[in-house]
Image (cartoon, rainbow, N blue to C red; front, side, top):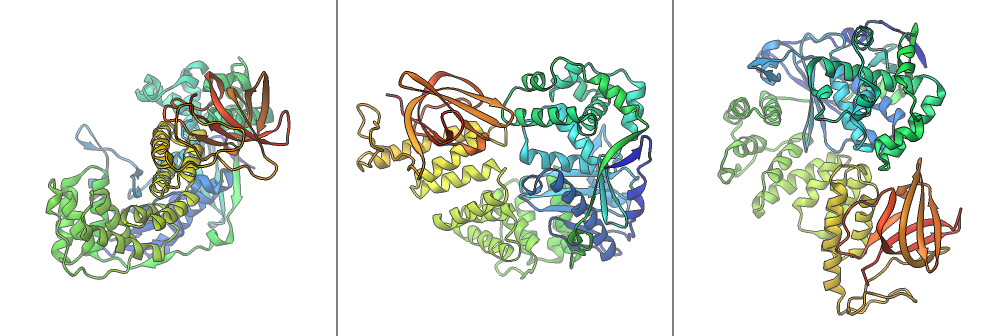
Length: 598
């Protein structure tokens, strides 16, 4: 911990991020540096781009230490583009009432790539907005369903980032002067309103109330992290509870009671100093130079054109694509970018002999565009496959490249292998899990598909994932019924399948030390991360514990199972097999298998 002045001006970054710029294609020379987790582009010296890369890598490493490597693993490339002059940057600025909005930076997340745009002549705090948005991306990897106040408060807390000691130390959670001033002058939102804020709430969308909301959310998070230790303990438990599906208001009452903690926040921000967290960077990051990559004017036009497409500005993008293709008519990336921008995608014509490239990012963007554009003919799929194979030969660590490759190949075994790699690297991507389950089902490995889907049902990372997993589970169950109807697979001894049915299900195999019983699941209780499962077996209700939802394997053999598997009573109770090992209470639950109705 270090102490920071309440009103310390965040001056540090301006000197570190000095632009040495020339003018766009032609007089300017654009360069690119690839760091382990970012692609840094701009009309500046390699040493400057390398320094900028160290800053972003430092921010990511600090978040990794505060959260986890799972949280900071981004499945798609993150491209940072620094502009040198207002004229070049203007087409990329957001527009409000017909006028460009003055900003220091912009975060543009998309399905296959994330862009960070840095404006010229940035102020010392200009990267705060970029780091705020990047923090949202990181937090969503581990806790996408948290309340709005917590999501915004955490993002503001992380956004106050400083790189210090010649790039060897990072500080996160530095006091934000504008918030402190606003909270001294404005009328605060009541605690109930702050905690209940939704994305459509007036205080989240309207002028002055919005500013107060952000300031209060930041101050509350800051106090809960750095104030009285009792608050840190309660805050940690609250965050765990809401991530496990406990209603936010109930989770708050359980940890904080009815006390109005805003009184504590008011006292906290009046302290002469506020705390921040400081880390010394690893040698690997502090001395990371990045790998320089060459950039032609065509590369610049295609890259910036792709950014404009991502921003929904096709006309400006078309001008850059046309110029690139006129200069390099055999560019595969140029042909794809320009062709897919047309309204009739059937007009896409690829060069018969594309110019060779040695750029993993160009191959990745080309393949992503082709597959996103609905490539289905074998010739186009072959182009996409070959581009992805080249990309993965250089960057096998990009999860989304593995997923794209799996979608482009006609080999279920290789597709499953690629999807397993992607999900292992980005376990919070529920869509990757669904893709893997689908591929496993296509291989008729229904048990493995149910296992993957069961993990999504138990602990979804994104709002719609649980229902999507339920829907796919129903499809898998039906496919398995059809496949096994005449197979007569053996059930566990002493168990029964659905009455009046010839379908014989293959249930989970018991492992050494495990026991299984048939019963009805009556409720699931959550206390912090600890989970208690209550199952009626015969005339007795047995209680099994698990350290977390993640520790329980959920499987279903029903095609009508809807709703959530979360904390609380199961109404009506579900017929299940419960599998456990020796442990607290009646045992430690290992698996719950939802059985067909009798």
